[in-house]
Length: 261
Image (cartoon, rainbow, N blue to C red; front, side):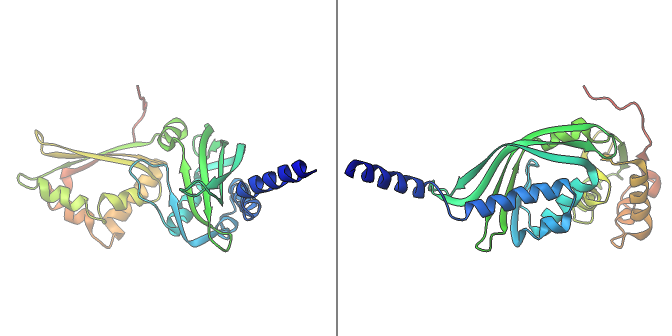
C-alpha cells in the first residue's frame, strides 16, 4: 500500500510539473484563431489578441511586427486566398527558455486553399507558436514557413520593369531619394504590390526597378496616384533628376510570357 501511495505521489508530482493550468484555455484560443482565419473573420481574430502583441513573420530579414502589422497581414491573407483551412498534425504545450511549461501553444500542420487571383492551390506546411498574456490573449505569434516559396508557386506574375535614366552626377541623389519612406517603401506598401527589387547600372546611368503586381490595373492605379495624388510629389522629385525629365522614366508594361528557370 505504501509503495502504491509513493508511486501515486511521484506520478502526481510528475504530472503537475508537466502541465500548466492555463494551457487548455490557451489551446482553445489558438485553435479558434486559426478556425476564424479560415472563415476570414478578421474582427473575430483580433478580439483574441492583445493590442500589445508582437508578430514574428516568416519573411526573410523582417523585424517583429505590431498589432497593426498583424491586422494588415491577416487582411492580406484573407484578400489573397480563399477556401483556406488548417489541418494540424499536432498541437503541443510550449515552455519558457528554462524549459518550464508556461501555457503557450505550439502546432505543426498544413494550410490548404487557393490563390484568389490565379486559382492555384496551396499546400503549405509549417510551424506556429502562440504566447499568451495574463488575460488569455495572444501576446506573441510566430510563423515559420516558406513564404517566398508559397508566393512564387501560387502568386500572380504581373511583372513591371521601370527604367530611370539619371543625369550625370545624380546617381546617389536618386538612390537616396528612392530610399526614403516616401520612395520605394511607399511603392512596396501600395495596394497590389507583391514584391519589389531595384538596382543601378553604372554603364548606362540607369536605375532599374522590377516589381510584381496583383494585376496591371493595380499598377495603373499606383502610377496615377504617384503622378497626380501623391502628397510627397515623389514622382516630380525623381523626374527632376532624370535625363529629359519625365521622358527619363519608362515603365514597361503590360508584359507576357513570364517564365522562371
